[in-house]
Length: 182
Image 1 (cartoon, rainbow, N blue to C red):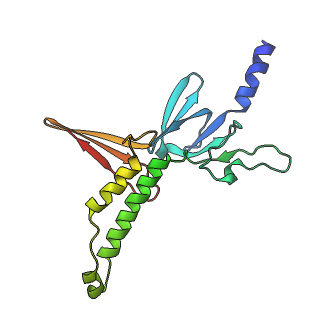
Image 2 (cartoon, rainbow, N blue to C red; image 1 turned 45 degrees about the vertical axis):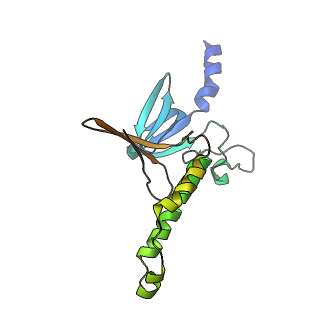
Image 3 (tube, rainbow, N blue to C red; image 1 turned 90 degrees about the vertical axis):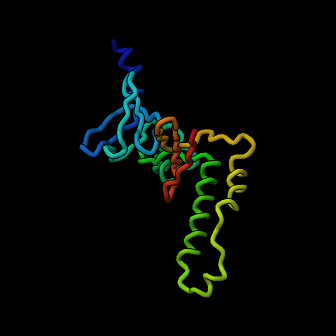
């Protein structure tokens, strides 16, 4: 029995913690998530927690922090021991980040045109044409045209004989939708 306890002790000591807004602390292993939920392995079960119920996520397992996270999240104190830290979700894939930047640039160009107070300047401006941005979007997806490892929310809507699938990638500053329909 002592051998089993000693073998399990490091696993228990290296558990991640999910702190809920109710004050409850859940010990386990972070298993990913999306814009609305966090998956957390507790014992032999995967539990899903709503983002609205979560106060913070603390990594104490000593695993490497992904490159997209700040160095403050993986700091070490002077004795060399790793500190526990609160960490955000993993960094978005490069294609998703570029797509979000492209959409943000389009919105900014549209807002510059719309918000120009000087009517003379505005008359000389040309409103951004979404079709001019089409090739830029195609270039982001590349030859595969795939959404590999993108994170976000998917919504389905059935209207009679039509099915619409909307994907909302997690863009840092604003929500952006990509819609497919049959």
